[in-house]
Length: 519
Image (cartoon, rainbow, N blue to C red; front, top):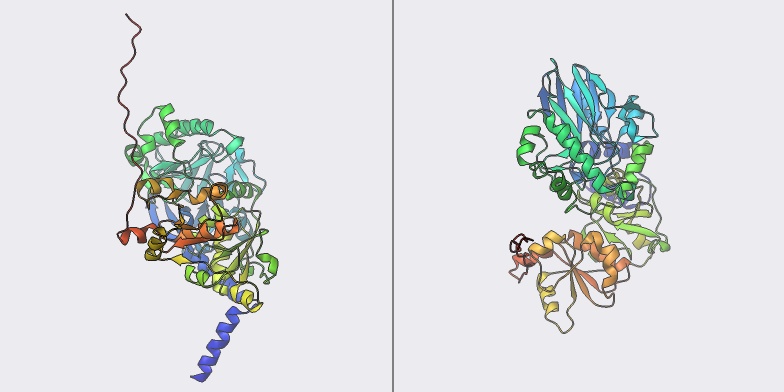
């Protein structure tokens, strides 16, 4: 028993030390983490071929393996290919190519990784003008995969070079059996047209999208199954459905964007109520065009950083991926709490500029592996630091507070009540909020924090505390010295029976009678 206990102590101390992890062990861990991250949610049978559908929940990213006989094609794969390798090995398939519907903006795709690992071609629209080795495709290009035929159809709108892949089985029918719609058509939504900024007006792309939908996709046959690149939670569109697939016929009936064929109304609708696009989107799109660097997964996590004092400065973004409870007890000054979870990837992407050096504060190698893997998928190159090393080096440790509902309520009744900073979305705030709250969505906090007095006490509030913690860390970074977070967020406040308010809905205007010029 003593021997086992001694071995356990050695193991724990090894995890907390600065010594590098055995490369073989790290590779095994990363492979397992990656394979488990991509969920196989369906393996659908069509005449002459099958489609395996994978979901990466943290990015709401769907990717696919189109396979027939012993041949397989990857469609819009993520950067780490371990789950696809496991599937093809199990089914004795040979990967003969990768099809990219367009250069994605919200994740680093696995096309150059596939070139290195499988020695296969990458098929992408000639109009994408990419820099990596590829087979350029055009409108009408056909690629054979066993008994299946993948036909490329150009569908500009989300981007000027977007395509969709129509798949025909055997015997070949007039209409495709299924369509890989990329970011052109989602279940319940369509691709956003505003990601190119000044490079191309959103209204022009929205007009292109209209013609791609009505003149091409909606003519593909009502029974054609659509397989999009994203589902609910993705920032590549608005109001995406949770369903992983649908049909053209079903979308004609249920998709809000397709119910009215008036072009002007469609353009107005598709350009309204779009979620804020993270800053890393443009960076990732360019990386995907150039060709991402091939990752040596055995080297994860990236470089181990020593606890140098200047780390607690504006030169770095220090992201603490430990739990809120650990962060509250002590953290590196200026660090931002973004606990490792499926939400971490998206929020890091929205608050951390890609070009800044990022340091991850972790407790152990497993945590470092997990966080680094998530962030590499969207183009970051994080380094890591053990918090225990920071403490042992005698560096300064800060403490912040996640206060309870009751304590918060007492503060609001005091002579010096804090500012209530609600960092949820506009829609969430309008529905219900704590009375007298100031609303600044977390995605806009970097630009609008100047409206707040950094000398006044403030409490950040979100739905359940996750975004509130990020807001607290950001505000401390911006110079606020008396900022706390409501533990459990607005949900905890409401469940405690505390008062809530809502924004009044605008009254419908009275109909105006048409003016007549006749006497």
